[in-house]
Image (tube, helix red, strand yellow):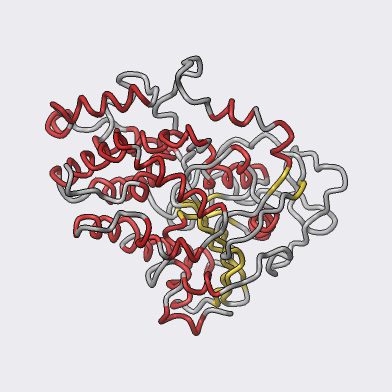
Length: 412
């Protein structure tokens, strides 16, 4: 339906990366007219994965003598982004726990996203021309017929969003949240989910079947026109440059907030969720843990963004990576195979099976990666709570991402 065009690049990224990472469907690797698979894309890099470049938006938050971090992510990524840059990696290493919107290796998240929808709902919402349009888009995306047919209707179209940017080298398998989780598991760092999949699905679907159907029609419009691909590519470029200033002006260039329906969707998916995310981060920090909170970058902007909310809760908020910057590759230790996935739980509780786990440390105090072999000459990171030494220069751009009302709490 033409008048209603919800913010396609915004809501779709919430679940698209999770669906692909959870293996809801697979794309045939042998299809000649399909984009390369994520694994094929990674294989072409060769030694390029040995280089780390700082990307994304990072803030240091401090209270009660402890340091935590806010990191704005993107739920798709390029093969060369599979490892965090040195500043981000050091901040993650200094933290006690990685907090994600949802840990997609959590069994509860898998069940909530992949459980069959009510057959009656599927018949009412996905029938006639709407069903034929969805079928055509699945075929163009190389999704095997019937792979998503039992999912919630909005998830069936959402799953396609994570695939449309593959032609530009962007894959949900390389989503930043996923790569951070791999890094955390390699160093036996606990992972906590700040939300649950059921709540995310409710926010995505809306308050009625009619609203869900409208969003599906608008999403199909975006796919058919090719507009979504351009939007996702632009968003990825903004994120990769750490351009918090442009991100803060998202409403000016996203072409996604023109109607009351679009504005309600933005509020439901960002402003309404941010206080709960802030509660989880604050709860973990207050328990004595240094938290590396990695959530979608759009949760960081505006008066209701996480930097502003944490400042209002008494945290000193310092921009670290928030300015568009030159990208400099740094040679880093070789990657190791990930450890078996731990189970994360909601609400800041310890990950099952990791309580009391012994962590090996180097002589200089950095957490050693179990089973990993450090590259020759790689230096051990000091386990202080100070800011990473190679943080980008702070600028007014990062400050503008926080709420004006809270600016006295933000360290300039």
